[in-house]
Length: 408
Ligand SMILES: [Zn+2]
Image (tube, rainbow, N blue to C red):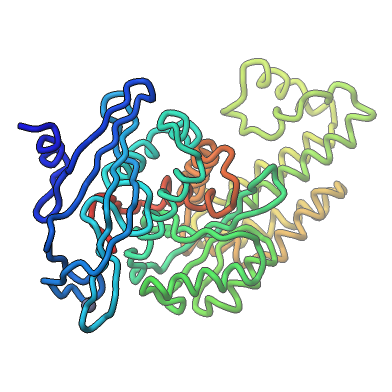
């Protein structure tokens, strides 16, 4: 068997395609395989699929293929154009690559498999490719897989933001709470963001009017966007974000008080963690600092925080009464930051209590958030927000990939 026949078989080429010859340069560590088609070979029109079209002319192209051992391998070949009676002159789709790509399908499949395991810059290094070319492959398959997604069942969503590029930009992320997957990510966080999500939802057979529950933080951008675009959705303010506001108030009280009470210095995390999560040392500090004879404002603020947390353990029929009592206590605490936080709670009253109906847990959002952190790590040096978003879909979108399926 000639080596070119061997490569014809190994590449899975079928009539009229064959390997004409190959050249191997051990110094350059490169293998070049030259593919051709038989004279008079017939092809299908890439647009309408009509068979039996003869080559009209052809164009020389090169594709990077999987390495042959440690040697970079390139396929070179004439790509025929056919003159279809119905569609005119069209470039034929070759069976080993998708149109417009400088890589074979097998090479791209390999890149997609690597992308599950390692950062993009590592893939680029291993394959000796520029990372922008690797990103182009990822962007293509993620876009293609997303185009197949069906969002017709989506009725409970969550939205959150994450920063990109050293915190200068934000991307907003929309999640299907029932299926724990990222549905849509886009740059920015404003009223337009929710509208963009709705358009994307509709493009995937979803219906904004079908969204019954939406979980978000207390930002006017999300609240306003939901009010305008998701008319049937009740808002649940995410427990995690509500707690963040109260925690911040506790910390403000502590920072003010430590000016006159030096024993509070370096106790920040003692007050922010839940008692059961404290280290032995922190627990001892907390026990000492909360002794009644100390009369610390921070200890009072801390108790108000712990009590607020108990809201979420109340039976639904007692929840609002509990929150009302808490509000009275907090607003009469004479602790400015706590009073301000309590007023924020008052302004978002229904959305906080909505949790008792919707039971949307922040667990899903937190889970997705840790995937996003993983996506950021894998996308390190990602050059554009589009690339970061692609990685978010890749890691958290639960997409189906068919990189070896031939595409036009
Ligand atoms: Zn045609």
